[in-house]
Amino acid sequence: MADALRKQSRDLQRLRQRLEGWARELGFQQLGVTDVDLGTASRRLREWLQKGYHGDMDYMARHQHLRTNPAELHARTCRVISVRMDYWPGGEMEQHARQLQQPAQAFVARYALGRDYHKLMRKRLQHLARRMEAEIGPFGYRALVDSAPVLEKPLAEKAGLGWIGKHTVLINRQAGSWFFLGELYTDLPLPVDEPASGHCGSCSACMDVCPTGAIVAPYQLDARRCIAYFTIESHDPIPLELRALMGNRVFGCDDCQLYCPWNKFARPSSEADFKPRHGLDSAGLLELFLWDEATFLQRTEGSAIRRLGHERWLRNLAVALGNAPPSREILEALRRRADHDSAMVREHVDWAMTRQTRAMGLR
Picture 1 (tube, helix red, strand yellow):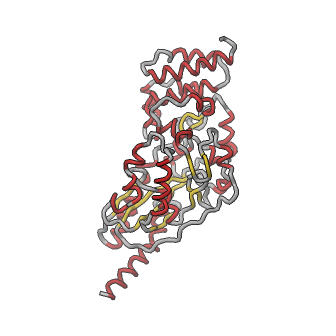
Picture 2 (cartoon, rainbow, N blue to C red):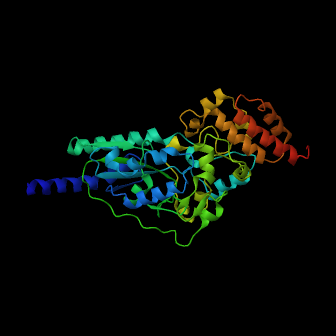
Picture 3 (spheres, helix red, strand yellow):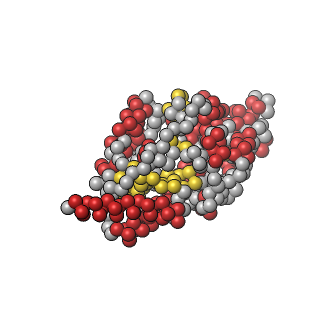
């Protein structure tokens, strides 16, 4: 029995050593392993929910137990293999930040400029699991990429991939924060890695630059004030008091990452699927607002943006057009949407028209 256990331990150690190379061959930039003890993260999640910072994301509370207990989500899970994959599109950070100062251009979160990452990463994780099976035989696992209730950032932090910054995004000392995360839940008792330590220090750049003050305290994000939340997650009208603060951000918000000093170490992604598509990294607001639903569906095929649907796409763009420099062309485009079938679109268009006409001194 003792000999068998020692052999298993040696086999798992050898497997762990090979995982790094396999992960890199599959396009992941880093891999780490952690146990499933999420006691600290569970407490922090509970406090965050109690404060109502999750807004209308009721699923965060509904699946709280599954998030904090990996073995409940996938039976017999005792380890989590955490991976990261870069998605930074390349170019100088200042170049991307300058787009926020071009109010007639649309700003789309950098992660959504290319193809949706979920299927790509999940397929690669499945390939990794099959490589492991070829080495040791069948074992229990489940590949996850934002596809189930998982505390991916705390798990990645415990696995040594980085630390959770004051903006609640994971930061890596050698790579910044422009990367996706994925997990392989497994019943293999692999050796675990050392957790990452924090290195934000006294820096408050992310908090200072947040357009809506959504980072209410270090390491605490109130989603109800977050542009990413109400342009992507929310199905409701965008709060009146936050619309002017949106600027030209039509899908997500990257300010806290664009101004994080650690992102000077960000590396451009080598994944062709993550490269910008359909000119979304430089598209004009008016151009995007004129897309009919068929064009929207065609141009966003395979993109994370498609989950919005045309109605919420127009909602977001109407607000951005209301914040754009006064233009009769913009006003005319808004008027053509003034009788849209959606009451929500009509209300946001009306808000934008009022902003435009006042700026032009027409009322």
